[in-house]
Length: 278
Length: 290
Image (cartoon, rainbow over all chains, first blue to last red; front, side):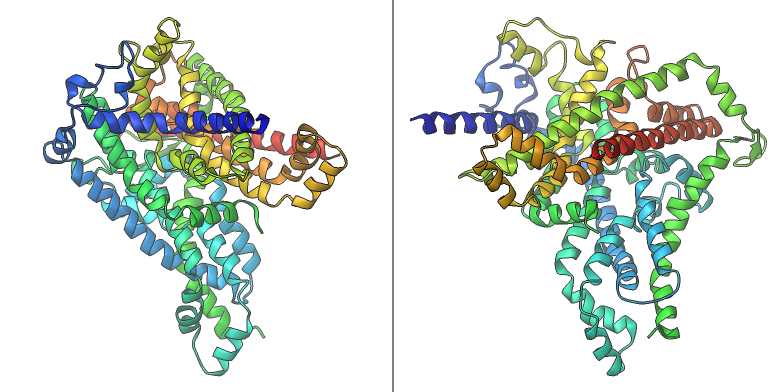
């Protein structure tokens, strides 16, 4: 009996914390599916119906995509995120291969510098970065959004850690067979690194999907707005179109959650390995 | 077995990433230092004129700047220990094993997929003083309506709450990974010796978790010193500068008022504060070790 009570208490504790995490998103979802007049109907005085919509409508989603141009922002974010992932996986894994497998003078020094660059947060350099990108003539282009996010010290670190654990004999055998370094990388190392590829891709994807300050200052024109900036603009312009604000928020959260939750394990591996193993 | 072809191949393979890091990470840091000593010319667009320490001297004379520093420090004194403690508690929770834990882990993971701008938009509506969900829940508990984000005294703490709602799950992952490295045998042995749960936590788990804890504290500090989105979206630094942090002030100075040199000087002050705080944190952790 005592065990039973204890078990109930534990579940209640976990449930209430889980509820705290779920509540804002759930309420946003429920509210995005109601007509706008219903949003605060059950809030004050409070009723459980605040969390379960009784009159369902997709009007808010229709509005944000067909009259507010939210689709373009989703497209921009997807384009920027995927381009960064593809380019980032290629150049960071090449560097990881060089650092982890090849022997050359200056290796340790360059590697330390590479990892140190990660310690300077992106937000801190966004203002000087603006002048760099302006000098390159990239302001208000996709380049400004994609290229500065491609090289990533932590992703290089991840690949380097993984590649340095692969037995070097593989390389020696391939070398005797006359294989070039690039083909060793493409034929032997890259196919082995699927788990790192997944966790690195997730890290880069979320980094770009969530970036806010940099796109805010690097891009001004409406048709290059990424999703987070569009959401913020939305929030400032249509403060009282609650159901549409909620619909946009839910949609912006849905895509990363759909990617993240099934691949949770890889993400945790990537994040934790970037933290302190090494 | 070092060969010339190997060296050449290595440099070629490193070239794209290292060039990009040099241009987009390392050069901007140098540009911050230099730019904070300059002002932009009114005559030739983009031309910088060296003005020495003038930007810093101007800042020191500005009472709002001092207020901004104080708000930044106040925020960080609270938010960093708060988030690390919560993340540690959550990590202990997800590290348990019982039926249904997978479901709870999923719930605890949700905020990782929710970006800070989304969290801000949704929480603003929930914290609305006229018709917000939170005030109506409080009313059900017979607590009077609170002004939340429009109050000088509450706005900063609301931002702490929102940023923590979004942030703690992420930091939980690191501490959870650390907990999994604590050998089970050690716990079992202490249990047999009669050590209670609290004692085991203080004597075994915490000391073994020192590295991940320090890592989370330091990284979290760097993130929170640069916290920007909630001020931009929710308060605009107000009411009456009560949430005006350095990063937001730097953004406004550079991109609303167009004073790049001054903005970069603010960034420099901010980075100095971050580095100083991180050094103090390292010292504190080292002292505890001896």
